[in-house]
Length: 64
Image (cartoon, rainbow, N blue to C red):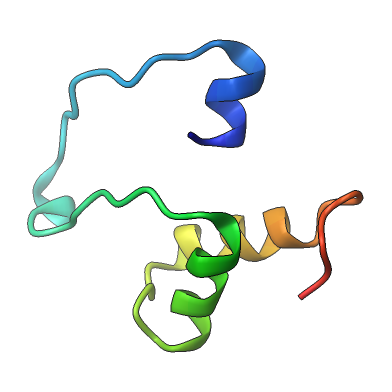
């Protein structure tokens, strides 16, 4: 479960993808696994990379 969903009681909704998002997949991973995927080049979309690395540096979380 994402941090935002846990804190704001959000529920997943229907995806509305535009042409630039075709072929993208959604995967739920623990933060540590997602950061490892960024480092391995498995996650390359800039917004996702920035959000994951920022989340990993959030106070109270284990550092990168």
